[in-house]
Length: 272
Ligand SMILES: [Zn+2]
Image (cartoon, rainbow, N blue to C red; front, side):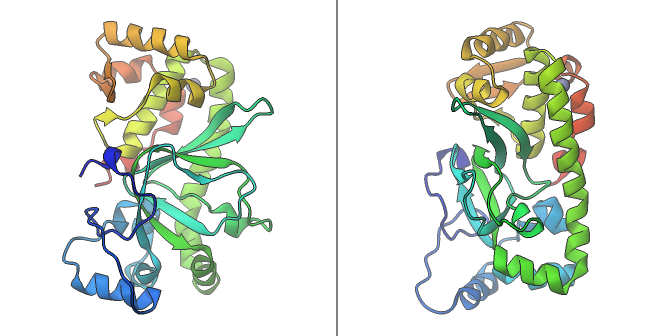
C-alpha cells in the first residue's frame, strides 16, 4: 500500500492498512476481536519506544493501541490544543513547528518511529500542545488515549523508563537544531534534514515539495529550488513531482553539516 495516496485521517486499519469498521461492543472488546482474528504481524513493535517495553507491559497496552493512517500535512495538534492522544509513529514522520508572529512556521523537531508525539500531555500540567505538529510523511502510527497512558504510567514505572531514551534524544535534537539554524548553510541543513526524514520513514522516495522543504527550513522556496538543482547536478539526489530520492547517500552525508552525526537516528534507520 502506498501511504502517500491515503486519504483517511483516522480509521480503524489492520497492520497492512486494510480498513475495518466495527459497530458493536466496547472499544477494548472490539480491538480484542480484531487482534484475535487478525493473523498479520503486529507492527507496534516497529516503534522503538513500544519495542523497548517488556513484553507483559506491551501486551497490557496493546488493546488500547489503535492503528491510524496519518495523511501528509495533516495537523495532529495546533498550538494550544488539548492533547487527547499519544501517537507512536510506525511509518509516518511528524514535524513539530513553532509558529512565528508573521504566520511562518519553523521546524523545531522531527519524529518518526523512534519516538512519540503528545508526551507533554503527561509531563506538564497544562495538557495542551506547546507547538503545532504536522505530518511530514504520510504513513501509519499507533494511537493511544492519554487517559489510558497516564493510568499505566502511574501503575508501572517501566513505561517511564521506556520513554526516557527518546526524551533525551528529543531534547538533544531541539538544542542541535537551534545551533544548526544559526550557523549552518541551507545546503548543509537541507542534506541533514533529508537524511533525518529518510532514517525515520525508511523510504527511498520522500514525498516532499520544494515549498514544503522551504517552509520547514524557514527559507524562501527559490533557495531550495536552486540548491536542489545543485544537488541533482552533483548526482546526490533526484527529484520529480512525486518527491525526492537520495541517489548517493554517502555523498549526501558528506554534504550534510556535522549536526547529522549528532542527530543521527541509527536505531530508527535499522528498525524493521
Ligand atoms: Zn547543522
